Length: 374
Ligand code: AMP
Image 1 (cartoon, rainbow, N blue to C red):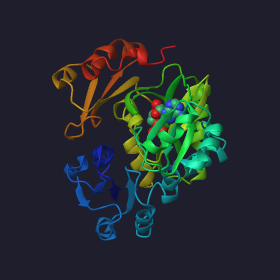
Image 2: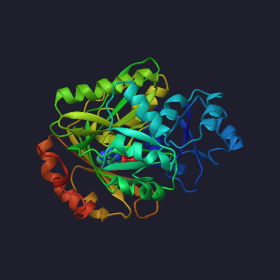
Image 3: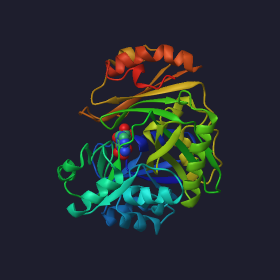
């Protein structure tokens, strides 16, 4: 199989690392030079709307996938006329636009925070009344890692908040005083077979994922079943092929969906060492028409992102059970440079060794206190 991947960041890089074992060949498409995937496979560089370059990229491929969501829909349609694109351009469209995404989730009976559309200043009073305060005004498009968002504590500051994100089409969303953040990574293949990884607990700081624990501590079977039911509804409605991640807030034992990611996801990186089959391999199996691999976990895992600057790597190397992944990106504030996964046989052992690694990697910014240790 010859797979084309739109986007050559760390997600594409890890996909290729796993895919080579399966005998899959790769070609990347990327707008920026020096992308992490470039060391692994041929890379066509071009803007995401450059159909000449996209045409070169598509030559001879068997199928196309993506690791980057902000691809213009015309470009996806252009590629889909040449080869199968997984997940389908329709699935991408739903997750590219927050209003469409929330409407879609609600139509399927998947709960979200209350929300309302903002297209003009005149919409603000009604939107704030619908979402309630505190609220977060979020741009509908091109948002990731908490960008394009502004918090509103009092409706009188809504206009200033909308100004601060550039008065772009937005939604106002009620602030959820959640107990914790969870995500589920699920995968569906061409034959319609579905597999789920266990719920993962995620700790964000300033909108960026810092730490994931899997399986989530104290997530009982009912909560897992709830997450799987929501994932199944979404996967089947979209006739989805590939990995899908759903981010949830957990509040009083209920799951409230925040966001869909139609791709392999940062909160699934622990599966490389912590599950029988990684999310990357299962995504490739799904899109290449293969049966899915087992999502059974191997003990308990914690994944810590390396953000902005690298920590003392010799200390990471010296931590038993720690697996280092570097993306070969240059340091920059807020940038994901790599991650470390710590895997232990039990959650007790994981919680015993994690503080030491967190101290090395996060220097006190993230601690066990950030987790829900009920
Ligand atoms: P998003 O870009 O929507 O994934 O938001 C990034 C992070 O901001 C989330 O992971 C939460 O930590 C926080 N956040 C986003 N929306 C809400 C909300 N409605 N209520 C509370 N926290 C939120």
